Image 1 (spheres, one colour):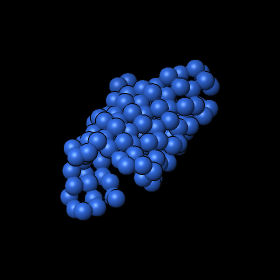
Image 2: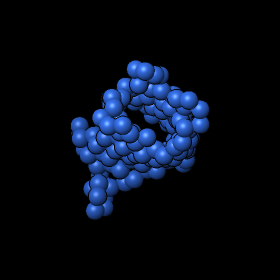
Image 3: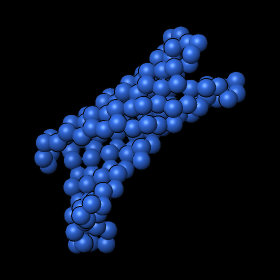
Image 4: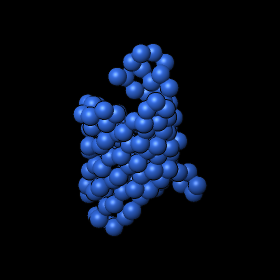
Length: 136
């Protein structure tokens, strides 16, 4: 389940620059339990198309991928792999509706792609359908 928290400022009409924290956890239980966690920190930009209040948002951040496997060698699940810091890019398209003069809620589709070189060269990616909330 992805979670993102952004804080930014409007720098031009309809353009917001922000810094964000993004965390996504995924549990796979096909043969044994494996937990994955992706953490991303970095800058981004959102552009709102008015008057429809649709938006496009992109960010590029430094990120780390952690994996805990299902071999019961410790109190959680067993062995743990943590990548070196890499890069992850995110792109979202969405729409918000005003619920008050300063609060909007909406939906968005998002794609992300990350690259890591250590301990093994890896590429991760995915798509998500998200809810959004903004305070202006």
